[in-house]
Image 1: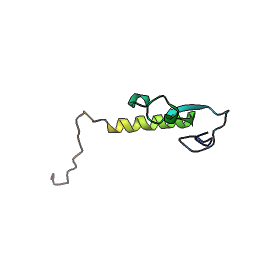
Image 2: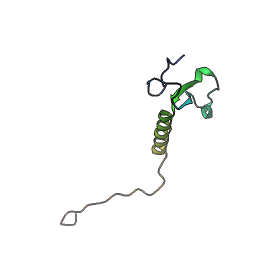
Image 3: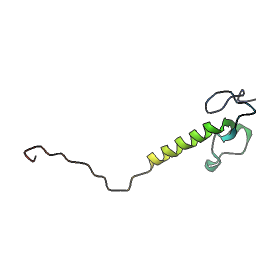
Image 4: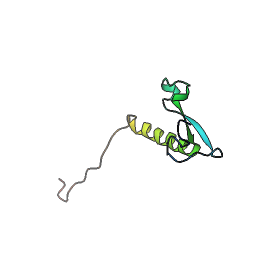
Length: 79
């Protein structure tokens, strides 16, 4: 009712027959509460895409601990 029958992620209509999940706007792991105002229905596929994209963003933000190197090109004269 609060969502107007639409997926919180993509905005497309949700049908009773659609595979769907409950999405926590503020994740419980980050202090989000198990209350209606923090929950929204989403298509299961939309949730999978959201979680995958979030995990890729997290990987990109982690510091790289390996040795950084780069290729050095030298001219014909060796400079």
